[in-house]
Length: 298
Image (spheres, rainbow, N blue to C red):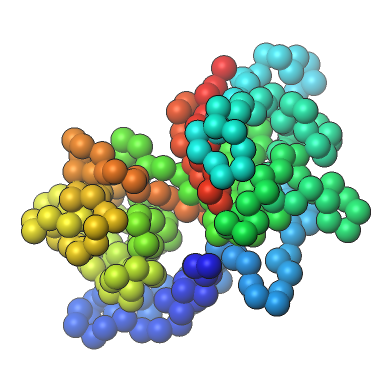
């Protein structure tokens, strides 16, 4: 099973090639801060993955009691692909959590994972029995934020990760991990600041271009990634589309990632690893293990 956590650690501990001195300097300056970040946790052989303890999960503040729970938006998640759950299954949420929850806590949080009980305690609200296919015991968390009236999703570090499918465009941030095919690339600032306002470095953590780095500037044309001859980052990989994704700089928005070539989408999608909380919006598609979800807000 692919262990992205180990690869990220190796990425941070090893220096990059000497060809571009400025790129090397950027990586050296970022190494310490990157090593301090939490990484994607995967199942380790002969070791039991550590569950996220209730005491260290930041709970959403309780909604204003003067506001009736029915006044908050509701969320529906539709299973659009799975190895164990019937396609078309609908999970219904209100502000207090998943309706029909197995934990039955009504604590504004919903835990999803491959195991129902651990040490005699129910740890998940919904169980997807795909542990052998990358679903962690306690894989992801969906919670409601009453201040913003938004639902948020985050990966809990157990399993092979939770990934958001890139839609129209994604504003890139330092540390983002983008995945497509067998490749995983990390977006890094090329300066002393962690803001992506100037040069960026794209470092591959896994796949055919593992450990390769590419540096880009705002003045560069659209950076195409895929199998075609005009791609700045070109792959000889039949699992990727001719134009898998592209990166460009926008004067007001900053660095942007789009799936495909900007007009036509890729075949299998381009994905963002959800290391931090991510807002769930209408028709958002995300995957955990071998299960894909699509969101609907009411």
